[in-house]
Image (cartoon, rainbow, N blue to C red; front, side, top):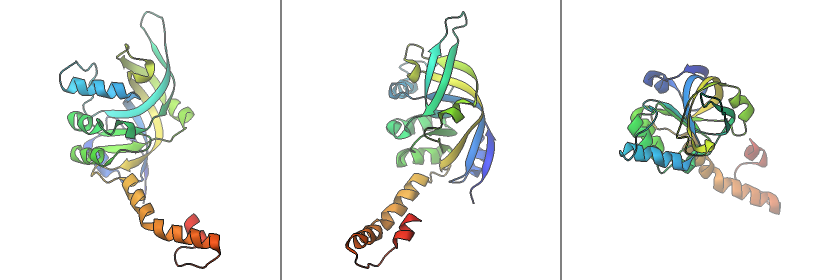
Length: 221
């Protein structure tokens, strides 16, 4: 049975291991956020020594979150995040396994899940993938307590690597657990297993001919 809990960041390996597929969580603590493919490629360059990484990503909560941000002109160079919203994680499938393994990421997240290679990497390091509510910008943005740091200001705001302190960030759903099990793969398999019977039932409904398989009511359920 799915649980709902609040987790403190940085997330321990033990807490990550205790989360089950479908559990819902809120988060308190520090997160790293970016929505840029160029940003991810730049992180990989840092892994390979081509540039120095300006922040510590070890065991971090690393999220695919876009934001509409505004630079301030005061002396401390403040950076305001006016709102944030998840972006599609599958855009980063090619680079995330290396990033997950290198930094031993405890939790990653965004919208739409990650592929089997990323899930395997999470299983190896004991990390989880947390699924954000698409279109939940007001709820997610309200969790921001302060901007801790902004790295790579030479990039457009959407692509910068932003460190945020959050409180009650969520609700987020565990989409990939620390063993590499994926809710996305499980649902895709269930859909594939039912596809033939569903198509037969729909065809029979159109023609008015009774057919074996799930009833229209079962399909809706």
